[in-house]
Length: 290
Image 1: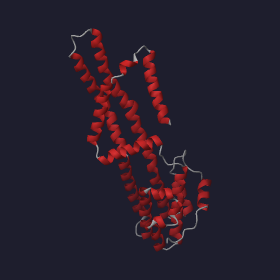
Image 2: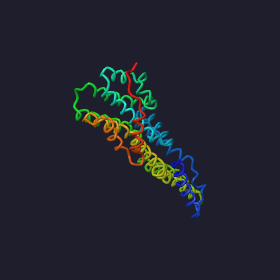
Image 3: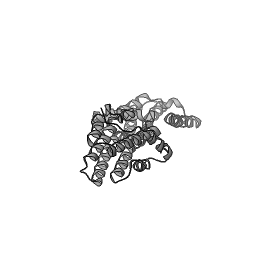
Image 4: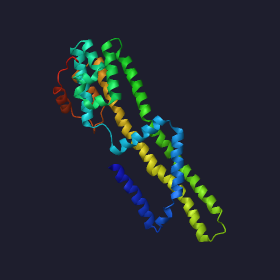
């Protein structure tokens, strides 16, 4: 919703201001200038990025429009799942815990959190480190270093769409100049025409510079920033898992360990301590996987 409001403000003020100071809006209607700028920008984007990044960029843009960031319930699900797994580690045998993480679809623990079951990346992240914990051979600081490295890798991959769109944004002003130069070249071929005709051609050429700068700072740049913001918030979920499990490995009880994880959530989105305690009280006792 905020994206629509922002775009309305941008184009409303732009076109309204131009018209208010006496400009003729029809001058800005130069489809071939926009075609050149948009085509070159899309082409360079395709040249610069592998297909996996191109597809992920489309996905990232959809996430921006849907504002697909973790909400309170998603944080509670992560905390609740980790709490039940830590309870299982303390009260069950290694084989019973392994049965849960080896076959989460048939686990009575994971089945309580269907949204996490559908998130293969998060599911794999949690299962892998719970498995390392129950092996009992790794020290907490070693697990922590490994988790930080993996989170860094995940973040780097998730930020590729942001970097790709930002690169297009950085290049759009220059692409606009290219379109403007082509328009000037066209105008130079009409020097024998009346001044009014020649002035219209030069004005049309300058629209290329205008459009390139507008697309850069008014569209591509803000969308790149929005992608970064959404992906940053998504990546915070992994930090919650890391802080919770490391606290548990260092001797904290499950109830205290989830508080370490809760504190890593931004204040605006952080569930209250009372809500987390209610989540833990309502969590069923873990049972051996079938």
